[in-house]
Image 1 (tube, rainbow, N blue to C red):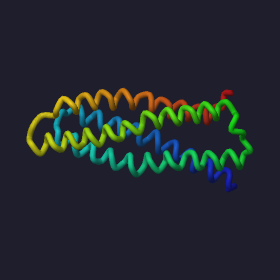
Image 2 (image 1 turned 90 degrees about the vertical axis):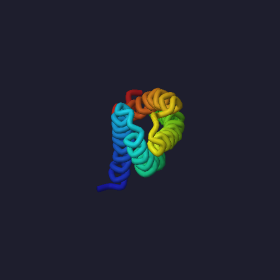
Image 3 (image 1 turned 30 degrees about the vertical axis):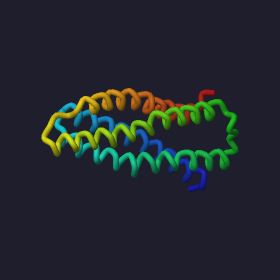
Length: 155
């Protein structure tokens, strides 16, 4: 196995982790939200926050590093349009992802408080959930487009 293919494998694995964790987080948060049970939402959101910190964050850091190494090893120019588009989409995904992390933390805390007080979820939770969904969709969509650009290199 050459160094190039090892780094490429790591890079693809990072993309899989970002997409897989994002899909899993969205699914579990949505399923927990549908129950309207503060205790269940709090437990689910707690795991989601940890998963984002461990898996998504490490992959998000790894991607530009492994991508940069791949550029060097393959002599790919930073001016390639597919690469510039991918980098712009990566920045856009990050601009949507960072607020989502803080929304998940606040939703977790609001659900914990409601569970501890045996009360219903506060209106702020529902505002955050709608915003979380609205931010997550374009952020996730950008990562899917990046994956397509990495594979197809259409321009």
